[in-house]
Image 1 (cartoon, rainbow, N blue to C red):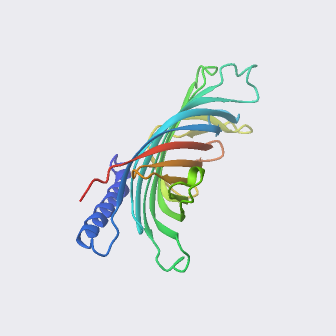
Image 2 (image 1 turned 180 degrees about the vertical axis):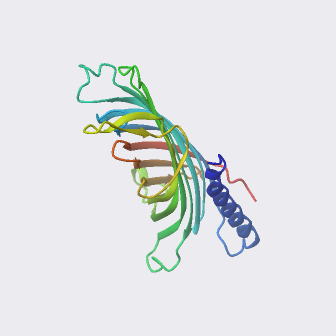
Image 3 (image 1 turned 120 degrees about the vertical axis):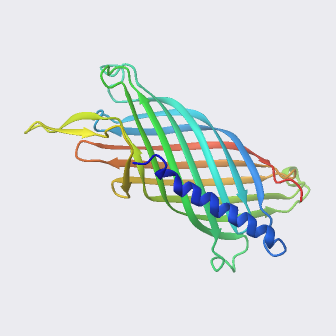
Length: 291
């Protein structure tokens, strides 16, 4: 497959974002100004699970820590987010300490991009609530190493997906009352964002496994090259709960919980799947500037 084939949806999203920015400048008297942020934070991965049937029949579970960075452009009727990170940790099986002595070292490189537009008729009579829909790109680079297995110590998946996304949100403003933490107005935003890729690409290592022990038939997993797949053969789902706390200096904090699942269904002996729960805290630097 052409190496550039996976990048055209990214180019399309960036084009739509740039077009939206230009349109907002031309109609600045009627469209709200966008606010731009650079995000930098830390996260913990309290629960991660992985199973690759071509690699091992065992299920690995563990935890990790990492960091995150990103860019956010947002207004009342539009949002563009590019969010990436890095997680590093350990996973173990029920055999840990016996035949599986080393555990499984893992690190993930997840990337999420979305462009969302407000659906005006929805919540038009509900103050501060909104619905936005659009497109999303999800990528995961998943790497695992278990040196108890000398002939298959390293394993990985590159998984990308392109599909639809939706977001429910609610802006909350607490007016000052002169007591404790309410000596000034407090502005917050709650959001729930989901994305469901409809097609994508994946890459896995090449493993030669037995798919039928009665006949001795072999199954070759992955092949070590990029493969194109639609939903079904390639399954991904991402759910994010975000809490934004807006500071009076125009910066903000983001507290996030993310749950992500992915699976590649290559065949009877070739299925791989994984999921993680992720908690993150990021500081958001306002880089909008003055006009």
